[in-house]
Length: 217
Image (tube, rainbow, N blue to C red; front, side, top):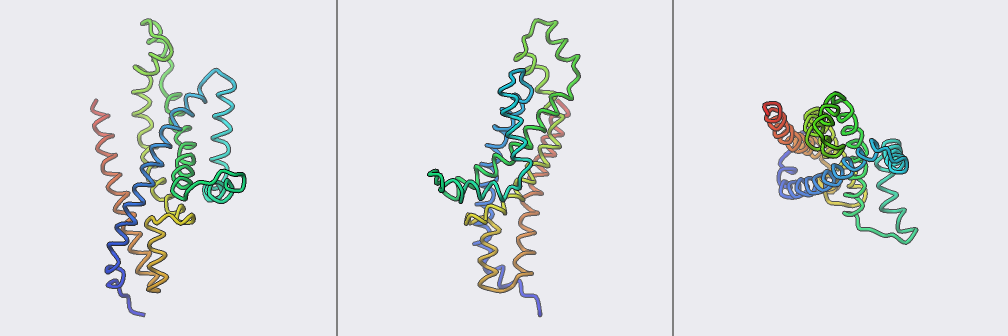
């Protein structure tokens, strides 16, 4: 069978709308994930046993179970216990919490990788724990964790395709609808592969520039 990309290109406005929805879901999930990751990493490093255990259980569950299962619990399971939520809320919350569990460990590992002598030097200057963390340790930890965070951000954009299972009209969901009406599977899925590649490439370029700027500073 001859390839025919004209059919798919005629649907490009729909695919671009799907790209915008993908970016919206991904960015909101990243915002939640980074926030959760910062809080989770601080709890994991805390001497408070309850906070430490709570953060450990969060990371253990979300890293140890498939994202699709977590998403289905939120969207299909929670209504069964009287906690219904929209597909958008379930998608963003699920993707954000899943991403946050990985960011928690990335940030925690980066903080632990900073030489302990830095904290001791800050203490000798009269800084307390929070001041040393904010002014001395955190700036160095951020530089260490940027490559891993960039990789996790890219994974979040790719994982956003799974939220199509709860009827969010992101790129993959739109592509599925187009494929159902045109039966041009190869053309449809190779086109969205290129669109995903473009989105992630732009993000990688911006992240590389940020990494270089921070290295100079």
